[in-house]
Image 1 (cartoon, rainbow over the protein chains, first blue to last red):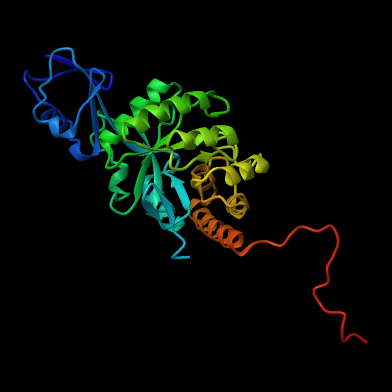
Image 2 (image 1 turned 90 degrees about the vertical axis):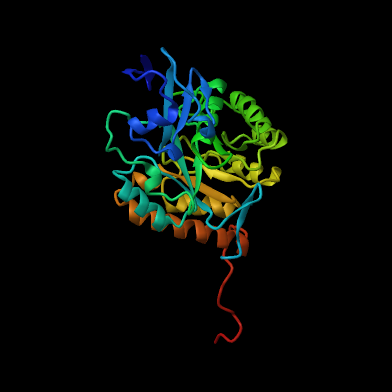
Length: 66
Length: 257
């Protein structure tokens, strides 16, 4: 199925959950925030939350800033 | 100076120099500059993760959140909605409820939209955030921010990254006299004397980024800023002499020939 991750279209397997998506992207779960269709997820829900066709996902992290 | 701690919303801070993490050439330089500055509060921005470059490093691999208080900002947000969204994302990505709240009003000056700032602060405070607002050097707005529950205010010295120093020392002095929470002078510092001056006026801390990161030798400037903030604080506590128009001799007349 297709989802949008940080503005880019991506093909992922059906039923994938947020933890698995982050693993596929080699991202540290402890260092990111995830927003799905404008809803910010609690980190504790990453495992249980399965993605759906067309979901718009934003993965955010800290970078240098003032 | 070890007992001269800054307390905000029950959190104690050792250093009165707070630093940003932007504009450094790499994370190694960022880390070195921050270590040298002695700061224990560091600001960060919240942005999309680079998902195409899998080797990209994370800033927090260089700045241990156990060692530093990570203060996320809402830089780049021009609306209340965006600032609130970024603050919530920061909380979800991080370890605390602290946020340096910015609602920017204009691209050229990056001055705060203070009406939007107050509105966004109200929403976030209701959600349990500890809101440290980046505000204008306006005493009335500063007091309003305190009234709605901000545990500190962060008035600008001058536009972000401008290096102009304290453009309106009289407003800053009025803010320092009128609010009963810590005042952190944020943005516009150009060099060590600007930071020292802010502290001499009685500011509780100074927050800067470009003044260090943009210096020709950032590590050396980080050290200069550390001493400037300490010197300014000590001078403030020591109490300066009044300014007088005419001389007063330092050497006694008595005993002269």
